Length: 538
Image 1 (cartoon, rainbow, N blue to C red):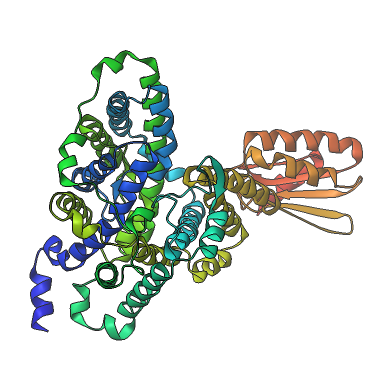
Image 2 (tube, rainbow, N blue to C red):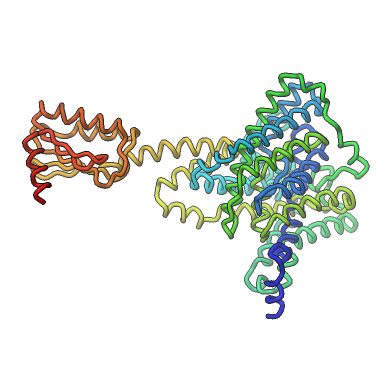
């Protein structure tokens, strides 16, 4: 009791360190192979990925207003980096110039307060994106869990080219199933069981487990088993040559990775084209990831998006200046951060510090970590993002929520994050418009009397639906149109009603329009005068 009272008296930031430091350690373990894998896939030095990860953790973490978001090199920018290097004659230093310019553009976007773009992404789409990322993580880590490590850690794309042959996520899983490495699978199962046990209710009640996260214990066990087997049973040990282990460059290679940009490339028009492409794509991915991180925040804090764009811009400028890859906020690392119990940005900053120290001080120890152990950590993070109850909850919210959710999820799984969200938003927009057409009006009738009610505010998007209803009104009837539930009626709708009122005279239709946009009128003047007289007497 005394301990809890003492903890409450500490400043909030200090009192959260018990959560943030262990979470930062877990994120660093997850981020390390992701940074290396993305750099290798981009055709750059592996250390350029580490540089970007350190800057994303420390610098962007300090400048950002987000509590849980983690920034670093992103798989979504790999294709842009590869294309840029090809167009610039494989000159990474010329690409660095493009990255510095891209960072400047992001800072400008933040100054112009264009971070509000994030507010136009529906919650159903963000939830679909998170669920899709969860499924992608699971699918992509299954081969690593089985010991098939041909694909780089952190790849989120469904299709790819491997050894000049087109491959996809499902074919990779099939290859892994037929070439299982028993030791890798055993390590995966043991690590997953350790994490699940660590998160069970009996263990969660133990205060000391808060300071020693389950993923850290699992990775320590995996690395120990790997080292023991290499010494006592080499035939069963995981072979580093087959890519089964983390592969950090030697410390001596670190300083050679720091390179200044080739400023002569500043005059190259292709550099500017690449810069704008990087800036736009990195900005969109960041805003989407920030929104997703906010959804994972148990305290429901909202990140200032304009400040985030400026933070990301400064991070990309610095990364480009010293030889790093492009940086964005990343969903996978942010999710691992949230589910590891992080409370503030201290975990993000600490993860960046650990990445730097790991490369400088203990590269050999980290090289003993099996990828199958890390796969256990990521698969369980993926499961938390896509639990069945998440689907159930969205479904209960109605089809207007569930359909965009599912389309976004499938789009993320079978394309990539950005394309999946765009498809989800487009499909969601058309679905909402379609649903609104069918919910905007109610038509009832009895004998020769018809009533058309406006159920909500009516915009021009409901013109087609209203036209279809009016065309179904038979001749020689009385039609009452009530707009008492609509505070706003678009001018196009008013014009349509006026036209119908006039044309109805020739079909024997007497129209009474009551309180539509504050107007009441009748097609029959005598009825109109009687109405006004009754209203005056009343």
